[in-house]
Amino acid sequence: MRNEQTIVTYPFRRWLMLSVFLTITACLLWRAFDLQIRNQEFLLDHGNARSLRTVSISAHRGVVSDRNGDPLAVSTPVQSVWTMPRKLLQSGEGLLELANILEMEELDLRKHLQNRRHRKFVYLKRQTTPQLAKKIEALQLPGLYMEKEYKRYYPSGEITSHLVGFTNVDDKGQEGLELAFDEWLQGTPGSKRVLKDLYGHVVADIESIKAASPGNAITLSIDRRIQYLAYRELKSAVMHHRAKAGMLVILDTSTGEVMAMVNQPSYNPNNRSGIKSGRFRNRAITDVFEPGSTLKPFTIAAALESGLYDQSSVIDTKPGLLKVSGHTVKDLRNYGALDLTSVLKKSSNVGASKIALALGPEDIWQIYSSVGFGQSTGSGFPGESAGLLNGHNSWSEFELATMSFGYGIAVTTLQLAQAYSVLANKGVLLPVSFQKVEQKVEGRRVLSAEIAEEVNEMLESVVKEGGGLNAGIKGYRVAGKTGTAHKAIAGGYAEDRYMSVFAGMAPVSNPRLVAVVVVDEPQGGEHFGGQVAAPVFSKVMRGALRLLNIAPDDLPAIESKIIIAGRDASHDLVVSQ
Image 1 (cartoon, rainbow, N blue to C red):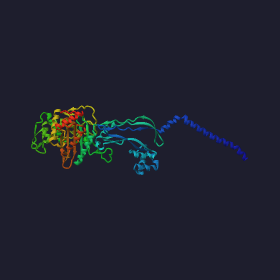
Image 2: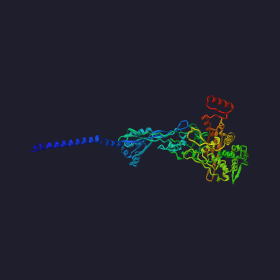
Image 3: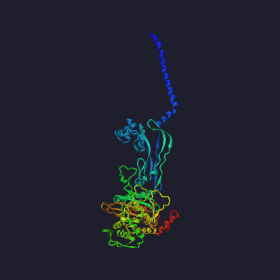
Image 4: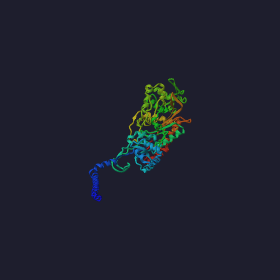
């Protein structure tokens, strides 16, 4: 019976197993048909959605260059490291190696990731060096990615730092002209579609959606050669006199272009770690000071313009002091009777005060305002100060007197340079420009050409025979004025803290450059503008005139003929005598 039962049940099992296998085969065939043919497009779309990604393409900022095309700010490609913390935490021993490369403790790295585990994007290292980026990329850790960015580099370093400024880690302008022209310099990012693997690494580029557009370049008015010269000499003077700070500005009188602008102390924009933010400001534009006797030429200009005075007018300054509304205005000594030229040569406070008191506040205010004091130069530089020039209706007699020799008014170094450019440019005020000027600039006449030339002649005598002797340049006629002002403190003025200033132009026969040098709180016994600031002016202006190939205008007749003949023969320069 048992044998019979075995024979009867065996076919049933065989057909059962066969049916099961046939059913499974049919299901697999149907599934294959469903995946490969029936739902191919649907599944392909979902697969692409998981592996195809649209990524951004970084665009670099435009190049900033000087007037001769030398780069002052460029962008270099770098790699930044970012992660998805939840994925990276699963890397096990790989975290230890990553922490070593990043120079971190593994525990600190884990804690950093753990605190951000719910985020999908966290930077680990911005703008790494190429060597570090290669080491990190070689780890091939899940959830660890590299992103191409651009880092700003400044070839001239601290020499142009206050002027050019810098960008932050996101390549946005933060200071200086990088901030002023940020929108112009910024590039427009592009985008592309890429194929990524399971770990999020890009396997292949699929298509370009939008090309990245680099930022616009900008050519500055700065001449890097003159900028370097100005920086070197100012730094040397500040160190020699153990001064608190220094500022220097050079303008092209025919265009209003800033040829050089330097400050001390400076900083390296390529490595700003540990530098206090106060160091970043451009003192030549943001800081104001009382300019002292460098304002006397404008008091003289007001006197000439009034018609009440001419160059031969005599001012009695004896006994060397003047009582005004209970206050005393003093000269260094009793200069006696002085003509207007001698008022500037001797830098007589009494002489300037008597002129101002005779003219009245409105005339003095008018000349100061017309040359740009109390208002922005319009340069567009971030943080520019308008200085301080109060309305003349509120001036007392003593304020009028002190205003005539540069107290009670606050100016920036750039403002003072622009004002002197009016004298150099025959009475025409030009807008200040940090960009290279390609076309003729239209200015605004604020002073007659005759009066401007008369004042320049007087200022030339200051350099030849007065307190500006140290500003002289062999072979060139130089005009300028020294200034030495006590620094204001709470309740009055400090007796032993000074601003040493020199403002001037060259060559006088046809002024091309104006320069202003300011040294803040020089130490060591010398503090007069003629001792501290004038020598810096001489060295910088001499070098700038030669670099720009500006012909000398104060050579002996025989030397002049040789130079002129040589120039004419090469068609390099035509000189009129």
